[in-house]
Image (cartoon, rainbow, N blue to C red):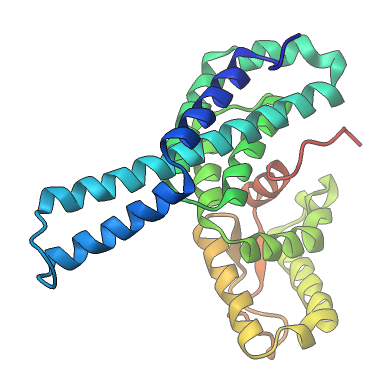
Amino acid sequence: MGQYDSPTEAALARLRSEKLSSSPVDGAVEKVATLGGIILEAIGFTGAATPSSFLSALKSLAVGKDEDNLIYFGEALIDDIRRLYRLYEGLKQRFDERINSPEFTAVVANATLHITRTNVENRLKRLAHLIVNGVKEDDLELESLDDMMRAAVELTEYDIAVLKSIYEMQIEMFSAQSMNQQQAQRINGLQRKWQDWWGLNLANYQGVKGMKFNSSCTRLQAAGLIASLGAKSRSESPTTSDYELLLEGKKFYERLQEIAAQQ
């Protein structure tokens, strides 16, 4: 095989090369300086910039950002697919069928819309993880993945860390026995888990740290990943309530992980 493992990789390399040749670092700095100059002109401090020149400068910056994001996302997607095939060699034919399906194409096309909403590389990598884990699990349902992609580019690393803590605290609540419990019994079990967790961790979440933890819980709830239980097990905890990890939150957290061999 040649320098590239696929036509897609060759295309990405070509795009990256064109990007570097047309927009070197000096050029990027010059663009920002030019934009600043245009803004000063527009508000009357220097010269006489027109609205069209200001919009053109903004468009140039936006196009450059989107190209950078597309390249990074494309490389992350290829890396994850390569890892998937390496770890599951016996399932290559199944993965080929899924990756060549209209559903996969639709999901990747949808991801290219979400990459325009962030410049954070970790969030772009999350999109690749979501897609390739979807291939692995044969779950490329667009509506569900769109919701997860939206959360992937909006949540902070700290939000994900809080979700991880809740996931590890409550994962056993998804056993068949726990899932068949009456709601009141399940809530009691969840509140006991929070009480035990705060007993071990409350000292780490005082003051600003506690407020930050509570803010993350609020964002995770807004994303539909956790739900308030309406009360809290310890009055001194910094959150406004205890929270339950939802099925959507469990699925989202698991799909964000690096492609791994089945345990």
